[in-house]
Length: 238
Ligand SMILES: [Fe+2]
Image (cartoon, rainbow, N blue to C red):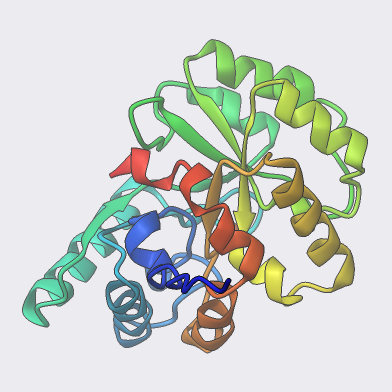
């Protein structure tokens, strides 16, 4: 006998994730958005996808070192633009830090987010810094919860290292674009491996420019991602 089984209602993934937490939308501070117009275009995409909040994370480290004043000032101007254009989304200003010794200079002043004082940390893509354990320990001891940005993108990220990060209590943030092969095959394979293992705590866009809107739209349709949406912790940051 045949039974009619209604298909489940389609998931609006943006509305489920609610919070976007890794991007370079604050214009003119790093290699991200180049103008307010570009920034508004990027934010409009998240609003359209159903996100409610965007945590902005300009690069801090190596080539880019925006001051707290520059970040606050740009953030205020962008909020004003969104208000004028009636784009309904809540914006906050954090940062994406390169893991480097300079971070220890003032451990009280880092731009964390969420109730667990999450700190978004990235490494250089080719070599794991020799003092990474000492530095991450200093950050954890100062009360921060480390979120490793795009672990799937690092050339040195073996499966063993990914496991170690996960078991050590670091939170792992996957880039949505990795799932559509935007950064190449190795990053795609690591991204799928992390999803399969259930080691992904957060998903983020790492959007730098409006040209990435189309591939991001596609990434939000990724099958495994959509199956796993209820396991991501993005909504805990709302
Ligand atoms: Fe980034």
